[in-house]
Length: 123
Image (cartoon, rainbow, N blue to C red; front, side, top):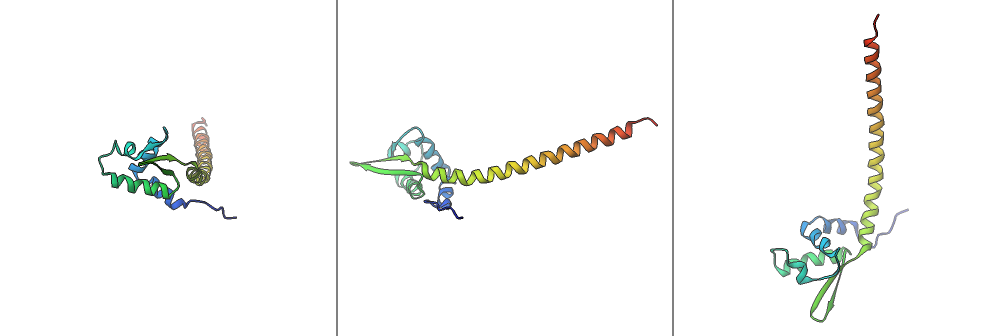
């Protein structure tokens, strides 16, 4: 069965691929912030910050709302959950692969120890 995602994983991961956008998300983990507050640490224009926020908003990672003349942003959890669920499937796969590799390496180590014991036995 195909799981329906409300936000495209492509747009979520594309949004997360940019360091500026990840920094904005990190700031929003502390709570909502105005566009001006989010722009403060960066040496880029407000229109550039606005473009980053638009990408984050379209991917569903943030919610942007206007209060009077001030725009405020906050994190949205749903898109993060979707991305996390997708990554989790692959984490489980890779962990099982590493477990199998570990078993194989242990068996090779044991075989090598057995060979060395046989070679060291006096005749």
